[in-house]
Length: 332
Figure: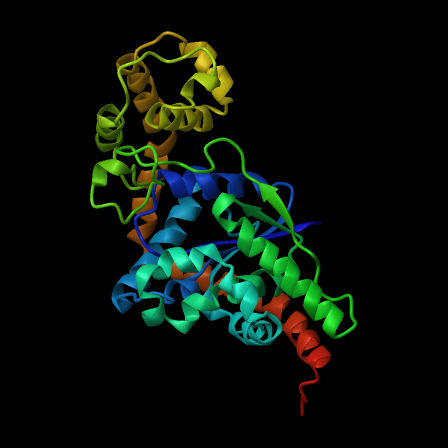
């Protein structure tokens, strides 16, 4: 069976963008792929994390994934730091990847901003660790959004250079799985910005732990414009807030944006937002309730991570050993 690897950072406050952009798609992929999902805590510390918060957020993200439908019996769900082979293979890839490749990574430039010299070395070589995450399990496919395409291309370059340098056909060239409607969910307060937990306004996002009242209120207060809904998606081209809400409805209802526009053509947003609120509550309310229940049972969540880390190590160990043998490391 084809194998998927994907991960999510334990930065807390999972929101609608995380769910529609990634987690919901992972749930659907479980039926057709051998899936490995990782809470990437090694990636998280490329920027400062309060230790106690990192621990709590790792459990919270795990609870959110399970509540959303990730089955830790069918797939493998673990936190990255518990499989040391990720870091070991990443070092090999640090020596395979070229500085010129990393200098082209736009995400480092965005995160480092004007303070590039003060950014951690870990943030700079982050893409090499991402490649190690994927290739450590010889994954064949990775579900990606727009902001991860460049890193996937680098992963392919690293795999290809390793194979070429050592004259082997060892690491696969990963294929992307392009995510569908609403893979990029925008802020409810500004349709030009991605929904984010770092936004100071809690009304900019719907958190996966929000209750029904909070979800409905945030949808009703979401920024729109005074015009009615168009009958065709082309009418949303210069209307970012309107396009965002239509995209969210489409994703939650498993419809295309064209179908949503046809259904609500001519409707005012006051009516549309009431129906979007009801749909969001129906879809997200049960997930939030289950997530809260799981968060309250830390021993259960830890047990899942522990057992699944063992399963991940069993797959990763022989692949890492083979890569080390190819490089020429002496095992005594």
